[in-house]
Image (cartoon, rainbow, N blue to C red; front, side, top):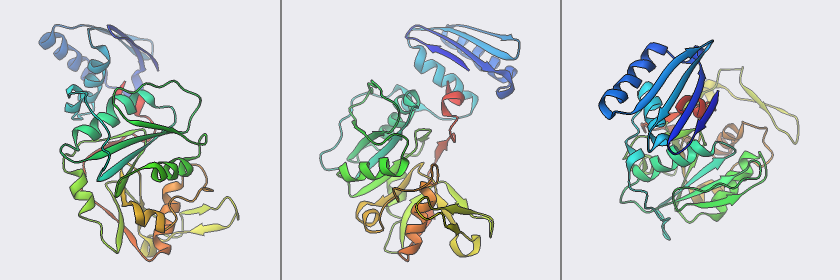
Length: 289
C-alpha cells in the first residue's frame, strides 16, 4: 500500500484484492454528493487509487474506510481537550511499536470518548524504533525495551496510578460507552481478568515454549479454557502485580498466553465480557487508511 496523507490532500493506492471496488466507489460517491468533496477513484493495474482534496483529509480518509467496514467512529469529531487524571479509576496502557497513526487517531480518541465522566489516565508505552511522535491528546509517553511486549506492559503498570489497568494493542479501538462498568463489575476474587476477545485452546494441540527452559507447555481446551487478548484486557492493578504480571521472558507474541498461565497458577480465571471493540490483528493501518 502507498499512502500519503497531508492536511489538504491524500493519495492512497491499495491492492484491489483487499477491497470491493463497487462498494468503495459507492461510499466515495456519497461523500462527493453530500459533502461536495473532490474525490477521485480509479483502477490501476491490480490497485485502487484514491485522490482526495479536503481541508481535513486525515479524518475524512478514516471515515471513508470506517464506513466501508461498517464501523462506528463518531469519536473522530469530538473535542480534543483531555488531561490524564491525577487520581484515575483505571489506567489505559497502550503498547505502541510503529502503528502511530492508528493509535493517535483511533485508539486514543475512542478511549476518551467512551470513558466520559470517569477519571482515567492514558499511557502509551513505546517499544519500537527511535521516534519523534507528537500525540494530539495530553497522554503520558514512556519508552521501553525494543520489541519486548511484556516488559513494555509491565513498565506501564509500574508507572500508572489507577486502581484498575486496561491493556490495549496498537491495532484496536473501543465502541462501547459502558466498557469500564462492564469490565470492572465482572471482576471479583475468582475472576481477575476480563476482556471482549477470548481465544480457546484446542485440546492437545496448543502449546508454547518457555524461552528460559525450552520446555513445552501444553494447554487443554477442557481444563484451561482460553486466554484473553489485550484489546482491551482489564485487571485490578494489585492482582496483576500479585500474580507476577506478564513474564518478561516470553516468546514474541505469546505474552497473553503466559499471563493466562499466571492466572491459572494463582487459582483464578478470566472471563469474556460483552464490550464492543474492533481489533484488526496487525492490519489496522492497511484496513483504515
